[in-house]
Image: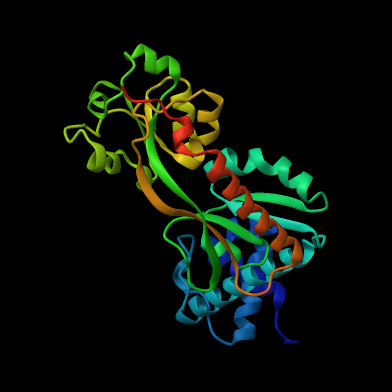
Length: 310
């Protein structure tokens, strides 16, 4: 590796990534002419042309050898950057990073973090909003709370909580609509839609109706948290996930107009971590999350948060 022209390779990777010298020079913070010199140096070192000579002022065209070297160099440098970032991010033994979805973080995890601090005062918990499973690959995330049909290969996973869907409204909106208490009355209400495909109104319509309910009308939101906020503000009726709406129901800012009617979803939230033996602090957070899920399952039962149907 002693004769590798590392600066020239870095410049070439930037040119390959951007498809141009000017953008590469801007990224590297060097002159346009310096990038060109690096390209010429690398071509001499390789002994083959890496760019077509006819490229001129138009888009750069790489030779087959240039394409191969560009891809390999870019992947290699990205891997080095990731590894270096992980090394630099030296965390205390009691630091634990959890990743989850934005709505679950805001609506379920964040309100419970003071309890974790009291139960485990030495643990320093960080929360990242990231729903990708491959986010666990680089070692910077210790465990995740994921939604979906787990488990997943190559990861340690166990069910955390079941979930269910049911309509919710603000008390003021419910009274203004005439206190609806039958599913067929949904036709007279403004629907609030969650873009989460698992929380769509179609699932409710199939189980509880009405069959003629139009799903084209109403407002659409990109997260469950936004849907529930809109419902709290009285903008319509939302189809809520039980685990995300529980605190608002307990606080009385939302209610269930159709009593205990719900669409059960089964195991919906999973605890996930990289395979292998976790650190003791990670085990402690894992166990605490399981305990919190069990507590919320007992205290926050749907029966205690629904209206009696007349």
